[in-house]
Image (cartoon, rainbow, N blue to C red):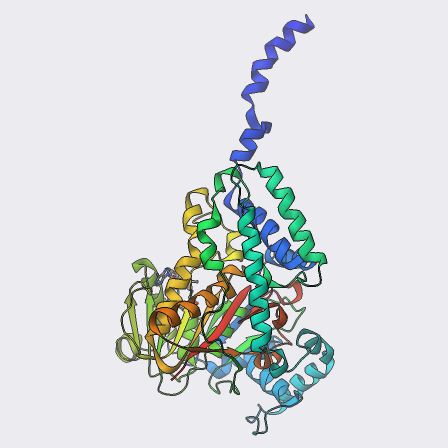
Length: 502
Ligand SMILES: C[S@@+](CC[C@H](N)C(=O)[O-])C[C@H]1O[C@@H](n2cnc3c(N)ncnc32)[C@H](O)[C@@H]1O
């Protein structure tokens, strides 16, 4: 009797496939794939620090409020201050004033009365050591010497050659993962590598999940790090925070939310909320009065809006490859710039649809923002829709560095000699960051004879140390990086400023 019953139930049990391993495997969502990929890759890049970064990435990020200059500006600033938000410009200027070896020129006058006092008090409360521990040395000391860079390059070339030897598609996945883990472990324990030595990282030669199995050997050229170009890295000259830019943030550890933007008396919205780290590349591009600016990958337009709110640029060309995305730029400009159609459109803003890899306005721009498409790490962990970790987008994902480098290389050609650009991503990947910068500098030199200087922004970053958590510049070769961190949950954001030599 018992037997009959069990036979009766057997097929039903099998129909209920929920727990079968193959089904579970198929049900892996893009966000899960992204997390496995990051655990694997970033775990080896960041070592013990990855746990904290991971927790922050999986938690809601923090915003900065950009106050609109074209509607109820003072009232909005007052309201934000009443809520306890800090004026980022004042905080920057006070911190700059207090830095050892600070600039000799006078620091711009600070706001009146209570705000100023409050800020100074706030800064005193913060441990100065915190900044010192993030940036233990001055910018001059931090900028690596050419000899050092040469040494690192030789070291890295060796690593890449070794990694190349590892590629063996016949090896089982388990075998490869085991071997790679041993290499990664060696990186972590070997002081020569250091857990955070991003510039020394060589990508693992496999990607988790058989459907993602791609021989990456053909991509090695994008990670190649030999330096066959005249490499120059110099500290950035002094940066002056634009007087007209009103940015507000909550201090580290304060996770208060900003009020939603509302319609002002002029009809435009009062403020724009953006991930705080996104402010930095657009701000430190340092657009000056009367300059012609290209935002090469501009949609939805937050960074263009920030540059326009400085009231500095003569014209900003907001370009994006997708029509639907250029429409989003237009919508944002319409919502924030008073009398957009009459006063801005076609005059101080041009919205264009084009592929930044092939734009041909050579030597036309004073400043260019190159905020490339990337693995958008935070977004990839949160949204399944349109996720770059979908199995159907594997090729696109693996080709990202190639695409990023093609965009950056072309944008360097679009710069006027003497002009500067800012390359940025919202990814933690050393390949998409320093790797792409390196390859592009090499390419513009070898193919177009263009020489460049990388601007070391370490000194400027010190002045933002109260709000953001930055990667130690020693772990980066060219750029700066905001690391997600629970008490200051901005980023990730990598950015690197490059000047085209005259
Ligand atoms: C990271 S988003 C830019 C975000 C924007 N800078 C902002 O702050 O709002 C990257 C953008 O690049 C665009 N894009 C992708 N490939 C491009 C290309 N080849 N040329 C120009 N834009 C491209 C995408 O459509 C996307 O809107």
